[in-house]
Amino acid sequence: MKHGKKYVDSAKAIDRSKLYEVAEALDLSCKNAKAKFDETIEVHVRLGVDGKHADQQVRGAVVLPNGTGKTVRTCVFCKEDKYDAAKEAGADYVGGADLVDKIMKENWMDFDVVIASPDMMGLVGKLGKVLGPRGLMPNPKAGTVSPDVAKAVTEAKAGKIEYRLDKTNIIHCPIGKASFGAEKLAENFETLMEAIVKAKPAAAKGTYLKSCTVSSTMGVGIAIATTKYGV
Image (cartoon, rainbow, N blue to C red):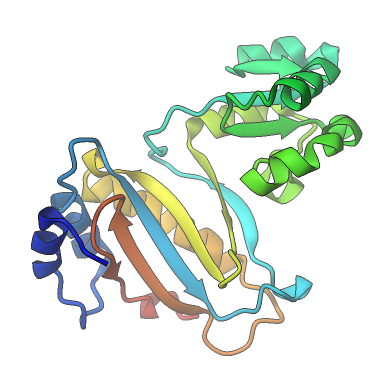
């Protein structure tokens, strides 16, 4: 694969054989984020689990202390008595069967997070084939199925992110923008890593954190030392 000049220049500043401390890695990622837009800093964690087994799944959600730098549009499914609370919390769209019809008939997808009260999941379940492949299906582990939809909206707007294994047992998560600077990104990074470590399945054997890399949207991956987490 042929890379652009900026990528090649950035790669020269990275020692591929080194495991960096968090602060240094994030500082390098920010300095090497030279695109014309504010690049997202992403974390990629490879775990020593086998996600094909239900008892080794790793999934959850965490509110990053400094947010993600992204404006999050929320779509809430709840009963009418909770409409006002959801809207006051900042929900962009609130409804029930009307929103289901809009999504199914118009392929409407102008939202980033879907939140539902438990009593609406029977209805929202009809959207499984639409929302599922996009990673938008509400889930209790992610905090997007909740009786307190207003709180769920507030958390989503504040920078709540979901982490989950992909098919290769890697978790990919954004932790903010390059403009945040290394210090704020480090706070977000540590919050995410603490959540992933706490989520270690009892069935997981051997080394849990196999590797951890940070990179900006257009940048080079920088490997981070994970020994301090002891797993």
